Image (cartoon, rainbow, N blue to C red; front, top):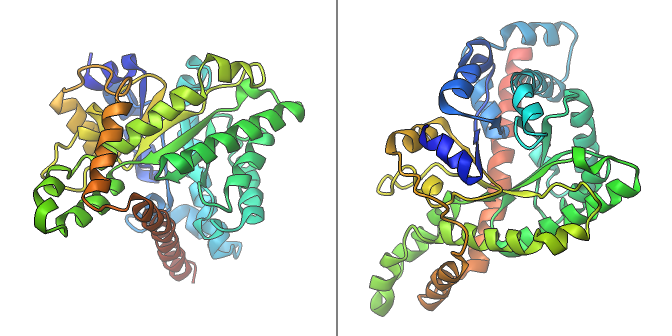
Length: 366
């Protein structure tokens, strides 16, 4: 019984936040399933940019794509879809044994469409058809323009991973979009029990931005500010978890179509950015029922070697989390501005990574 196994017993599924052709063909993914209890995978544009820019694992498929004069965009998605299909096949046993809850593999819509609802819906539908696996999830960002796209995709029976959530307020909009989508799916004759969704709440990026602002506070609040470092991300996630409990309690679920699955909170960006913090703190402090934690492999290893899973650290924590945010406001932290910065940076970073990948593939395709 490892720390990851105990995490699963508490209700937190561990998904690997990484994927590459090399991980698949080398048997690494299968090994991680058996030795580290990984039950799913998430990807993003930065992950695929890193995977495709090194080694020769994609050379054979690239040669085929080049021979048929594939466009750069088509080539990149063809390679991404292939990886996701193969990973889905490797996790199909978990998907089946958990009734669709786990065994999931996520692929993201083009981040350049983040402010274009129609383009996001069109690509989400296309990717779902191309991957053609019931355990795939299509990642859609929680931007203003993409919120309706989340509803539209779910209404078509597509399982959705909503990404780039940084605030409880935005999370409430995501939940509303989910409920509207599931209701429409039922009206469209879809079997809603086959539709699953997660809401990816980013954690460490919140601490990075808030900590930088806390470091700039001088004068009478300087000492208080320093004491608050490393607390915002976990407090933010814990407030989100309380909203999840409120929005998906028995009464709320009874108002949704029969067979609806809860949209689980997913803790993303769980690799610590500050080396002074425990490497597993976004794991040990965010353990509890009906959640997912998607981790880069070093964070998985830190959780396993640290062996610090002590129990449910989410339920009943909202009051203390609210006190952290009250203290942040007292020392002058504008949390609303923090969220605005993080939302735009989140999209921009993925756009930059995607553009870098496209440029690299353009050179290889000649």
